Amino acid sequence: MFESLSKKLEAVFKTLRGQGKITPQNVEDALRDVRRALLDADVNFRVARDFVEAVKVRALGQEVLASVTPGQQIVKIIHDEMVALLGTSRADIAESPTPPTVILIAGLQGSGKTTFSGKLAKWLISKGRLPLLVAADIHRPAAIDQLELLGRQIDVPVFADRSTRDAVQIARNGVRFAQKNIRDTVIVDTAGRMHVDEEMMREVEAVRDAVTPHETLFVVDAMTGQDAVNTAKAFHDRLRFDGVVLTKLDGDSRGGAALSIRSIVQAPIKFVGIGEKLEALEPFHPDRMASRILGMGDIVTLVEKAQEVFDKDRAEELSEKFRSSRFTFDDFLTQLREVRKMGPMDQVMQMIPGMSQLPGPVNVDEKELVRVEAIILSMTRHERERPSIINGSRRRRIATGSGTTVQEVNRLLKQFDDMQRMMKKLSRGGFRRGMQGLPFRGRPGGFHR
Image 1 (cartoon, one colour):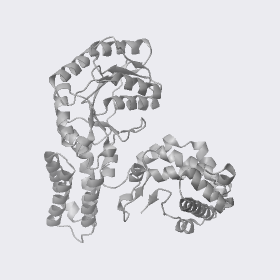
Image 2 (cartoon, rainbow, N blue to C red):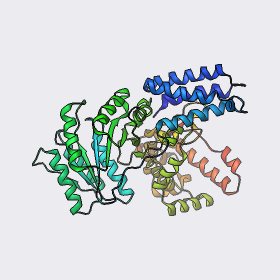
Image 3 (tube, rainbow, N blue to C red):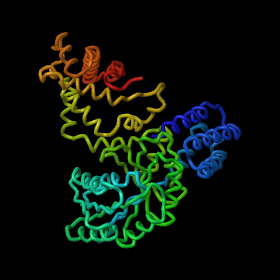
Image 4 (cartoon, one colour):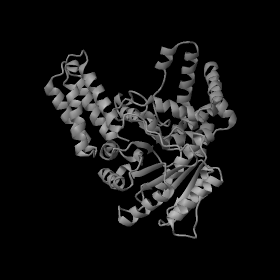
């Protein structure tokens, strides 16, 4: 996400940092490039104009021009203003003091409302809540089936009534069902259309009036750019929603919708969808997102994701194996699978501070990670524990069994051997020497330049 915008802004920052002295003229030149980068990213032109003007006022202040590192100061100003543009602080969803809390989901057809409803239910479960999904989309074919399927996947009940075409009645009865069955949160999935029309708006308004939601979330496809902003404004004028959910943000390299919507509708972004899996949902933190856009990483989210997927006892066991050089291919496979649970590897890499500033592109090929897993699974248990016994004939058998080549098997064995030697050096305290032995050759490991 945001690759195009991030690269252009990083080029501007590199120029600023390289200036021996910052003057009003080179500030003007830099901000012109920033404005152009924002417009190229499909940011609303008024939002881009106001953002650049706010940065300019602060950047031309005496404390910046007289600073020892004025280029760095301007970068910080741009970061601060982008945080302000995105919403300053995290906006939580409402919680009613008297259960159930009712959350209404609205948006156009195809924006990902139903999938988001399932993701939100799964996220609420992780917070100790007991959600109920209500299938109030009675227009889209298979919408009810889709919601019921998602409910089964995450073990959340779904209230549906195929005997009626009255979305208001379904929503109202769903809330009553939650009250009787001790579900503390009701997520009402409403119908959408391919475009904004009066019939859809009237139905959503009627559902809202019937269940009086504590939270109304507007779901929009981030990849639609300026159309997303226009649709958000049309919905907000009628519904006065409490927050925005940006779906498919992982497929949007420009990011114009994320940077424009809050300023246009004055409603916070609360969640972002970053993939198709039910785990691929992140609460929106303006400061963290600004850091990602500006190529500064997002170490806090990275740590949170790691804490979610890594078992503490297992981590301590592996740490002991590192120190005693007993790390096997089984251990490596376990770690590989747990890292992949954190999300697509290119997104994980973006969260590492400074990664965007390394020379050359960092390529993370998910298919290569699948090949690595296939190679390891084609080994016998004895071979995974003692890779040194894998001779030529065994390598040919492993390559055939994994659908790879002998060369790929050789590369993985070489990398694993290098890694074990590095661990031995680290266990003896030779941190610098160990790091010098670390091979950043990717194939078939999937991390390469």
